[in-house]
Amino acid sequence: MKTIQHTFILGASMIALAGCGADEIVSPGTSGDIIIENPTPAPAPTPTPTTGGGVTPAAGCPTINTAGGLTDAGTISGPTGEYRVCQLPSTFDVDDNLPFVNGLLYEIVGRVNVGTDQGFNSTGTDVTVSIEPGAILFAQAESFFVVNRGNAIEANGTATMPIVWTSRDNVLGLSNDNSQAQWGGVVLLGRAPVSDCADQTFNTAANPTANPQCEQQLEGTVVATPFGGTDSADSSGSITFNQIRFSGFELQQSNELQSLTTGGTGSGTVIENLLSFNSSDDGLEFFGGSVNARNIAVIGASDDSLDVDSGAQANLETVVVVQRTGTGDSLIEFDSPDDLADGTPGNALPQSTLQVNNFTFIQQSSSSGQAVRARGGAALGLTNGVIDVDTDEDVCIRIDEQITLNAIIGFDSIVCDGVTRPVRGDAGVSDPEVQAEVDAGTNNDLTFTLSLTNTFVNGANENAHPVFDATARSSFFSTSTFIGAEDDNVADNFGDWTCNSSILDFGSATGACTSLPVY
Image (cartoon, rainbow, N blue to C red; front, side, top):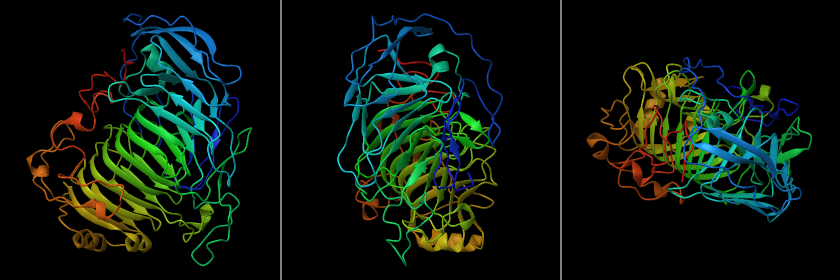
């Protein structure tokens, strides 16, 4: 994605989220697949929905605290059985809990809010919504779920009972391994700093307090929805052991939501054991804030798998990314603002920082020219990583602009099976200059002979490669004994909380991504 403005459009059929960053994002829509910038392969024949399975509908909807409660919308049937449908309120206005009930699904209709915006200078948490392990939430069209600034979600599944966010088509049994764009996604907003200020007054090193209330704004919504603040440790809650499937409905060209979008979330927010499956846009996108995330799987994203910008301070550990063969751009697209034409000057603070430790990236898309791309003065650090590029012509690491080259934190214990052009410099940076940065690190080999098994699990060559102690880079990182995301056993980090597909089979007891788990 090339532009800085991000928009959610909300109307009878649209929602637009605007902020400054590297892509435009808009939300979801009806069921079925779409074509975005990178053409997707032809989908498999649409299956006919069938009923069956052992699930029978719950007798009714649980009682919750929010005014108006849940709405009983009858039942819905699919291959795994028949379910009671309980529609969520448009806004949770008090602390609430969504329990797991056998034979019950929660439906997201339109925009569902956790609380209302509590303000740039607010403290504490107003409304917290908890979701129990095993709960399944579904949606269609432009529907999406947003945790507003100063509120929180506690969506904590377990290793054997993840929380699943998915589409109506998935419930009906109409989704296949190439489906996408069937609903919106999940949005977390917080009070940590962002670099892109909606009022176009920016903080810089020369004047770091030029805008003491720099925030981005969700434009086009009925209710003003800002995000950002000054608390880098702010908490928007916790999301652990979650799957987000078939998200990112496109409203207009290059405008869609991700599985998970964060805006100004702080380091107090816990994101762990999260699967993004077949997002029609980026897999995960972080706009500003201080983001720490661990045990992340991004499978089948149709644009960038991980997109980081708008002054984000991000540390990601134990990450597996696998593209579909016919769609997907960079596995990492990483930006700091650098283009006045997009409204944010290149010296705006905070400068984006991204460090990734213990990762395995599998580039399979014919539309992707490079695995990792950094630009705009963004500060990148990569440690203990394995990159498998698709063809001899594909690039392992691309760096655009001298300010980005100068900002590199370091590359250590990175291997890639590059051949023709393992590194690429652009926009004033030469290939030898990028290679010199790679060579300045320790134990890097971008023409490495890979021996991966089960698509992403280390073989003998990866497990024999020297390991870098990444704890020196971030206190969030742990000491590892191997490079890559998984040394031998998939279940160690990516077990039954994931789902299986033809793109990547985790061997999960939860079952296929095209089906609902039954407990």
